[in-house]
Length: 277
Image (cartoon, one colour):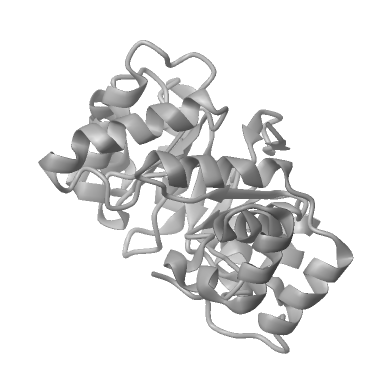
């Protein structure tokens, strides 16, 4: 496994398991649990979830999947913006801990900006950290201006990551957010790094996958992971998809591959609003 060092000095796995839309259908729960466990067995020990996913259902799926095997895992969860007040964030975190069946969340994120002042959320996160309920905190869906505002706050520089939409077909963050975060040595966590499957049917991706004898998802993830300070959290709810994702750690794209991908998915030529799904 490749690791990315967080600002608190803790190494986080560069490739993990996403859980968006898990925990929503009882009939799929056993398959989702198996997929997560298979990913862990393949070395994908970072699991990303949120109280929003299935209104806690995804956290319960994760809790079942990791029961008895917490050691060595890196757990990420997220708090709703309307729960991110001084008291609300603490209560929400305690509910997440209970659903996950653990004592500490490794990385706790504000899911997106809401009506609660950032300073209040940071204060709550620092309290959770001091109480040992979380090891680190970060944000999600923050653009460059949001990050500048956060860094200007007391303890704002304790932010450990920014989780944003990023994949071959959505490269807008390369214009300003990525450079600003790299200046601060802040890792970026890419959600939906497969573009919800859209990028996988692009001929350039399919051709490169055929050339290397891998799945298109492996190519798309290898493109994301080739960059310094980047973590990817693709969702995979079946065993074949988990295996294809894990293979990205062993794929090195050559200069010709990167040139072809840049031609098919051009880099941004100017600023754009942060893309969110």
